[in-house]
Image 1 (cartoon, rainbow, N blue to C red):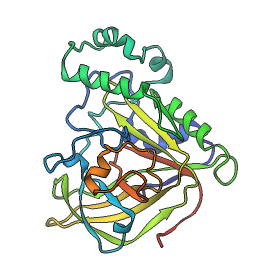
Image 2 (cartoon, helix red, strand yellow):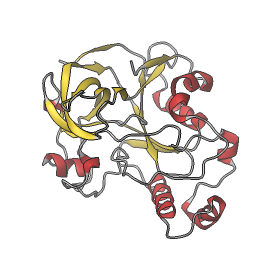
Image 3 (cartoon, helix red, strand yellow):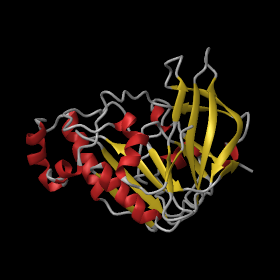
Image 4 (spheres, rainbow, N blue to C red):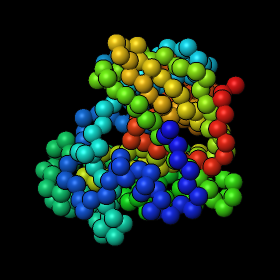
Length: 289
């Protein structure tokens, strides 16, 4: 099961939950720029074409039902080579600002104009951008800073004293090695009650950076059991988030291009890759209606 309960939000408890995926090392000096993170929710333009598998994660709430089939892109991640969190003290000692980009490129030994330099600049620019109306956002440069943001944002929403949990997509098996394929929804999707949520998405950078954000509008979170249609099909317990109010999203948002809908459409949903996290108050889980 991808969900684990966390009661006190102390970092040591969350280390047990996600260090196996993210790790914590003294430093990383490489950037995975091989794919675009479609879950960054930049709410701006992104090419939607048949040649871009990254966009094959969007669907509507009406599509989320037992027996439904849809093409989904789940990128393969190698935790051993993925950027990892720095300790807070070390992360805080390194500037995280687009104004310091020349210094940072020299610090990490990346030449200007390289793919790594471009990825760093895009991440810094995105993190420094203004949130949309009703949204709070934060780029976490350490695990501790991510937990602080989650605790502050979800404070008072869970049962008890700030109880929250994190859910993430889990690949139960990946026998085919296919990252884009048709999947069948097995059983009824299980809604995770989430009066409020924080989504945290990985960003390309030499060490782990998570873009975390929360919207004041209604959102729904589901755990969905999927099976690939390929021979010996992959089994995935996937996290999906459905946004019930998209009126503040830009008209060029990739989901509208993929789904053929307009801003304000209720129930724009997307699946999360396995290295992203959704934090929700610790309440019960039940089958979707």
